[in-house]
Length: 216
Image (cartoon, rainbow, N blue to C red; front, side):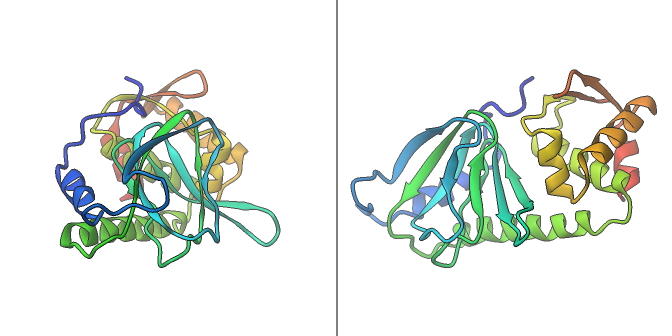
């Protein structure tokens, strides 16, 4: 299975919440409230400092959120896969958003009204951001990469096989590691029989509980 194609969303709350975030008849400029936009790999969706005028839901593909540090380095803060919502902001975006691969994004433009389900979605993203801080705070590279693999496995519906849309560089920038360390840990997990690799992007999860044990 190619994990980053559009998938049925098991959580109907997403659609209910997003259906309610646009006030009746609301739109901004010439844009329609539920417009779908298509992005090629590395294309920018919005930039740090842009005014926040929409919410976004990934239809297919993968989106990365990142910040450029003062020394030019990139820190990836989140990856979003099919069905997930991003773009929550307090008036302006504090991160860049880019497509990792070919991606389609549903854009919800218009006046956003307060909604309990929308708050739940925002809180979910906050919890995910806190979890990421815990991951990069772990002491070992093995713990970080095991946590990354378990998180993908859970978010992609417990699929044993998936294709990584992100490169080793993306993973390194997400986990605060070097590319060499990421490659070394993947090789270590393969030698232990935890995963099976197909080329540079294909992954089979063979022992998910072993990976959970590493990052427990």
